[in-house]
Length: 416
Image (cartoon, rainbow, N blue to C red; front, side, top):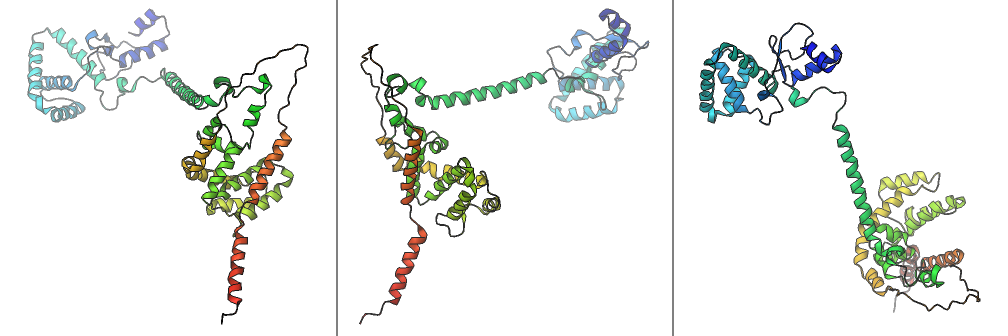
């Protein structure tokens, strides 16, 4: 057999032994001498090719009923002299399919009687073929089940396909995420939805800049609707934070947003004043009895206080993240349902496209307008913050006034 494989396939003896062993373990070749040894030997051992009816590539599967008939036939032929593992399988099958055991015994007797009518040579060949077939389909203990486990391979041919499918699923999920994001922000994209009232760089009209200024009194409707997309969009917009602060003051939690903005100023502001800013934030928001004390857990407070010994721009990240998630999960949903947001949405401006008649004159110089100065915008923003800070109520001052009033009442002489 080894010489036949080497000659027909033009391979080495080592390759022929390996290939012949794989073919034998799959049930296409069976040995005539050592039946349980499914490894091809480089000697004079005899082998035969399995009949195509018993090839594993056939569409019919090896059912328990067929195996039970085979064991029952061998039990009749050998008069109960089955191998130990065959006796165990025979007992298990008797319990599992006991409801049709009479049919199995009847089929086994008929096949045994039909086999006795064949010639001795045909009986031996059929016995070897059936034995080799069930040796592969119902592997004895201690032998490798090739059909169930598969041959030992250096590589798995399906592993790359599985990895490629997983990567494709990741790409598809990312694509859906991008498409969803684009659908949400489509109305806010001036390239897709148009630039209203008109493009200032084309029309030489500054209405677009004025309507979309950072702290404009009445913003556009698309800008207000953008606040409802997610909490991050609200916090990125200065006008959105201003309106959100108005809502938080009504809920007596305005110090949360004030603390978050102070942390942003520490993180992205002038780092030469980082130490002074950190101390001011601690006195205002974190110290016991602070004027605008915020409620954070003891673990976060401990991390923050230890970090303030060596202040730097990210020293308050833990507390800032805690307050950010608190506002996102607790206050943001109520804000979108509150009259504050609904009133702002109803007042929001819907700009209309303005078409101006062109009076093109090549001999007249076109008057160009500059964009708003960033310095002026920064000054306006600081003035708005100063006015907002002036309206904050100092709790300690109010409490001191109440204590003073109660003290005066106690010192007043009783009425006669």
